[in-house]
Length: 374
Ligand SMILES: [Zn+2]
Image (cartoon, rainbow, N blue to C red; front, side, top):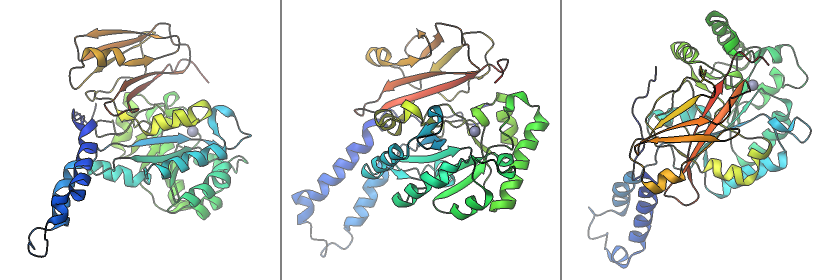
């Protein structure tokens, strides 16, 4: 089922890149370097040496994708961020040299093992008015881009809360791109395979007609998908995003890519800073079925290397009401919530401090109980 069997975790990755960068800077500033007479040694070219040195410090090839909805002080808090706080996000990204990539650029560069070290992608679901009104001007100001997932029927029906096709045409380009979110925002788990196919194909057709041809990139409404749906979407040629938090790497399932939700208290600066600085959890690529049969369900994490006593003690996992963690040796742990899950969607989140100060490895799963209707 999983199309990425290989794990990209590198045990040296945590300190290799900063160490090489320091080494490079130190060398250039050193008296030996300064004394080298390059005119007499045409073969000894600073640029060449830099080129030889720095490919070693290529990034770990991962990226954090953020998920927003409303940019407003008056919309529901659970899915909103104030424009003022959103500007603080952009300011932080700018001040700290993050590269905010366009979504399709990030996916291409992920494929080519060519992502920058501090990689962030901004996305928003549902094409609300406040995107055009409040997010777009700020993105322009900071010269950053955002991809928006559009439920096309809501636009066709001219819902007041949503942008119009004309508004989207006006702002699309370098700053704003639009992608597939199905037609009517149904829970895909409540639909059969042919209905899901119609949702995706119709939405894509509508976007292509109204805004021009685009890449096959999808966000599941509510982030809900089963393993069967992931397989169907893969066969249809789409890359797809969920709503569980985590960092994208080559080990991520291409039809179940994570995004960090940014709303309410999750959007506040301390949480935002943690999220954008997050690293992938060093686990073997393995997809867990999000639809559970036992309640509470058990998540098994298999690490790509042995964890020492200190690391094991510092692995933290969270669920409503707490979790029980049971280690099998030093590479495998099971995580089970202490109480049965009572919502349609529930999450387990796990963090592990990395060797870089203040940076955490992160892994999350969204469990779904389709029998609970919304
Ligand atoms: Zn949505």
